[in-house]
Image (cartoon, rainbow, N blue to C red; front, side, top):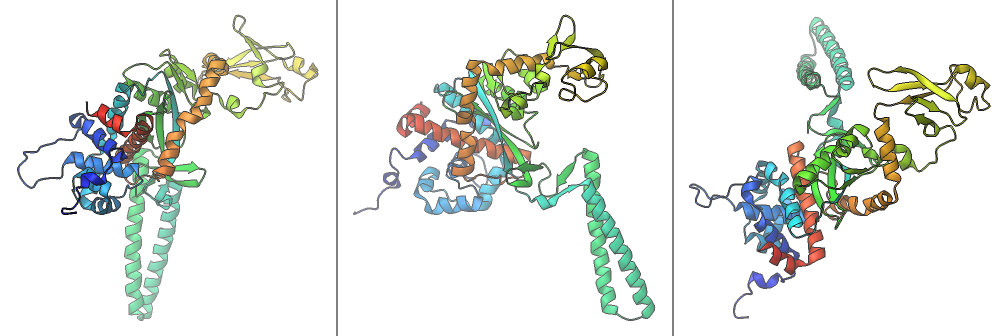
Length: 463
């Protein structure tokens, strides 16, 4: 060749990097919260669009650390083409992510709206799912009140011991060197005591069960791999192509309080009310499900008993029939359980059979062994729980629930296995929400490429 080849010739038209380039160019940076000021006076900054392309494309291929992104921008042709030869160092990349957490958290919303415009998201049936992800912190740095008190007791005991040793050394008028060492140890213990006291005061002030000194927002997460410092990542997925509508990260160990919040977040992105919402039994908090049911949205979430798949026993509570008109329960043997009282705190009502009737029953000892007779508690929201249980058993609901694993669990499999993102790099809720938004957007872009193809997707995004 008389002249060296152009870099454009090394990037085929069907290269996925072209789709990522077109996607970032299609974003509204003002809505994201990133200002582009080409005429700004002073030292010129790197183009925010190019920086965002670098981050999103890097995350899509499991390259997340700022040092690895710096290396790719020097040696990887697709990265060089994408950024126009820009070579920011790792500090600049890390600073861009740190300063634009809110903007990065908004990337998924715009990505989902692009999918809606392209007809890839319908928003009729939504699946909610969660997964535990590690924080950028060590579980050993998690402190609770008991640990603080135990450590303070040890420090106080050691301080008393050091003072006693110092006094003995003074009386013997020997061991000057050891006295210096003891004074240094005493100073270190006093510093540690002040630090532990600070943690204890913070626990009391913020009314937290525990706190991690590396990342104060993370929680002690219990998962299949044991306990570790982490977060609970949430996604809401559309039924049509399994694309993510919204994502979130919370520092709670379970999903019980998340269903209504995540469904409402997705509805804001869709700008309409979905027809149905589906999740596993981990979301079966009646109070949460009621918030969605009251909006006229069909809720498909099994109770813990339904999820277990075990048939109820002959004297299980579900075999006791409630007569609303008479306000009584009827046991499997046809005996009556009458209203006995109300728990004012929980709002639940208790129904009991007569002790004499139960003792004379042939099933006494199997149904109950209480000398006061069999009792049944009816919760305040029992009627809604029964309605949702019947709704879950409907054939159409079962078809939707069978799709849940295919649609809702695929994104986390892609994010954790293909993108190698078993944990977060950034710290604090704002940081991990930003990372989760980028990871979810990466999944959506990969799905769009699979469904539409690179060339057609680029053409649609350039319109």
